[in-house]
Length: 180
View 1 (cartoon, helix red, strand yellow):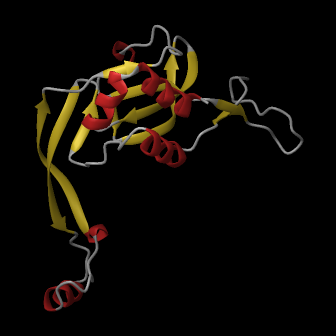
View 2 (spheres, rainbow, N blue to C red; view 1 turned 180 degrees about the horizontal axis):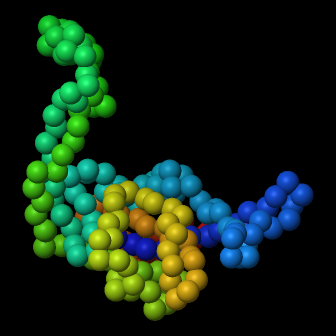
C-alpha cells in the first residue's frame, strides 16, 4: 500500500541567514527529513517497507515485473573467465549486469492513502505515468493547485500495511514520522 504525506520543509538560507529566492521570487525550501532516516524509523516502529525490485507501484496499480539480467558487454571477458574459473570468489558484481524488464503483470491489489494534511489531493492530480517506487521517498516536488509542495511517499509491505490499516493509532505513528 502507498501512503502519501506532505513533507515538512525548512527555508533555504544564504550565508548571512537571509532567505534564498527562486527565479519566480518564491522562497526556496528544503526537505527537513532524509528518506533513509525516515525509512529506518518506519521499519522500527511499524514494519518493513516494500523492497522487492520486481514489484513496482504505479498510478494504475501494482505491477509484478519479470527482470532479465544480462552481462554488460563492456565487461572485460577476462573477468568473466576468472569468475567462471573461481565460482564464489565474487569477481563480478551486480553492477556488471544490465537489468531489463521483459514482462509486467498488473496485480489485483494496491491502494493509496493520502494524509489529511493534503486535503483534496487525489490520484487524479498525478500524471498518467506516475510511479511511486518502493520504500520511502522524501522531498518529491509536486505542483498542486499552482503551488509547489513537497511530498513524502511510503510504500509498505502487505504485512506492514495491514497493521497500519487495522489501527488508526498506528497510522498516526506513521504520519508523525513522515510529517514532523
